[in-house]
Image (tube, rainbow, N blue to C red; front, side, top):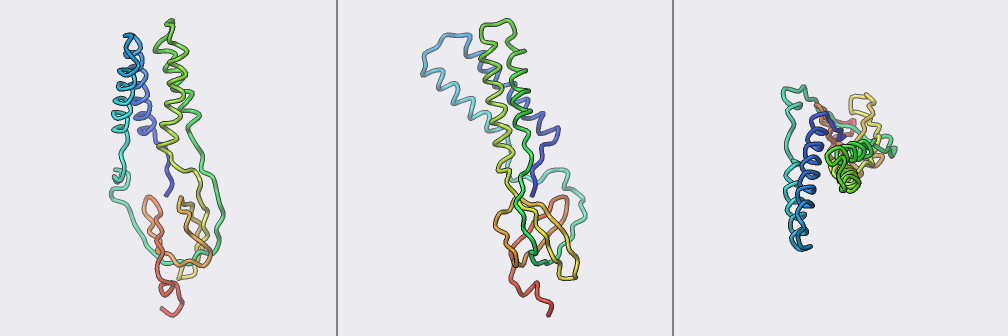
Length: 180
């Protein structure tokens, strides 16, 4: 399963970063004790956790053609997926600087926006390590799949579900034998 950032996801991250920069600026306007600032920052992180969703099926997966087949893993090659954290950090720095342009906190806001945006996108993207897996289907076809799964080895028998994304599950070797 490959995670890619759509424009909607980047917009959501940008909105969350914009909120964080404005909240930080609001808190810095008032001189408050360190405990209050720490409490405010903790509240901000709690609010920011609501900017992500986990376990939901996207609307892009509606009305999809889905096929399944059994296959034996023939080849496994480690790969690295691309990251968009650097672009997000640059966008966060620009937004933080523009929000506080001409203010004493402009540099701090740019730095905070860069770090926060880069970290948020890195967390959203997750692990960027993956595998390119060559599969020999029971019917003789050979297909190549890129996946985030790291538990596949040559010779494994898997059930493959192909829709808008590819999912592979380990199954008994009986399903991949030619006797069926």
